[in-house]
Length: 437
Ligand code: GDP
Ligand code: IMO
Ligand code: MG
Image (cartoon, rainbow, N blue to C red; front, side, top):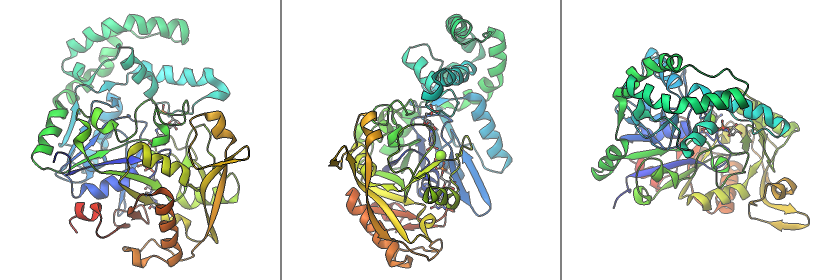
């Protein structure tokens, strides 16, 4: 059957769940890793030994030699940032020869970052707290049918021609609404000349490549960016990103049908974090939140902002399981909880006297929701050297079991540290098969 050799990996909270680490680990057994949405707002960290890589556009499979890395049509790409990313990897001895870009992916250009910044300034206290990378404006221009695409990088004259069609409108907006002097056509062409030269050879029909790879029985990983609650439709709108971050987008964002996979792994931290604004029921602004931030090193990979921290929220995880059709869970950062006397988990919300296990669609309702906690005994042992479930203290295993029960999806992978090697794969699971066990 189509898609039995493929796995979609998505964030099941508000992003930064450790997708980069999980993808890098699973990529050892993959032939192709494809991103299908988002842009350089993503910050995916991969650690092995003393090496730390922070990837923004490039799939975390790039660190596995022989793995083809694709930037799919659902992405928005900043060509200048991508060049820097490529140079940085090459400088550090990582071959980027396996990278391919969909011609249908849209480009983030200089004016998108201006729009992003000014939009946020004008929103004042109601700002989204974006990464400032121009993501929203680039997706808006795509929907308004005035975007440039990676295919337009194919030759500089074509790039100039397409930009010339669009720039008068952009300049009018920049000058009249955004207090900016606007751009000269040739100035922009020069800004992107090198990117056209260097990136155009990488632009191919990635959808066909993927389809052929699946037909040949190759193993394909789809790497989600952001997380379910940042999804433009199903997230905490308007405090979301501008793309579809959920598993169903893996097909549409890479040019495949919904049967491209039957397996969806949801990555979850053993607690919850969020960067940017918006409601967050289990947020803890006291000692517990500070402890999670300190022990978990919770600072944004892309912007360096301190992440807001709180307890694990099973209401969110259940919602993510339903929206994505999760078949398995990857629980990360279990090590961060070591040393706590009690570990809390929100199992329901209380809203004006009523208790609900459902995640509300209305943000004003979500703001009024108070978490209903179940308390679990903590553990003091350092779990970072655990490599099997049996190596974990009883209390940690019981906490994972409670998570499984609350979410209704089996835990297939547990991460106990940032390094590739600090990973437990549950035997007799799909992932165990994926890893060749
Ligand atoms: P992503 O955006 O989902 O890929 O996640 P980020 O890379 O933005 O943030 C996750 C952070 O946690 C990174 O610094 C990772 O190196 C780190 N990390 C991932 N898994 C673990 C883990 O199990 N334990 C610890 N302590 N750190 C982890
Ligand atoms: P990864 O892939 C965490 C958040 C921003 C902001 C909102 C909108 O590393 O998990 P945007 O710049 O996308 O318009 O910002 O989304 N955000 C992320 N938060 N991890 C990310 O990516 C994020 N990408 C965007 O902080 O709240
Ligand atoms: Mg991140």
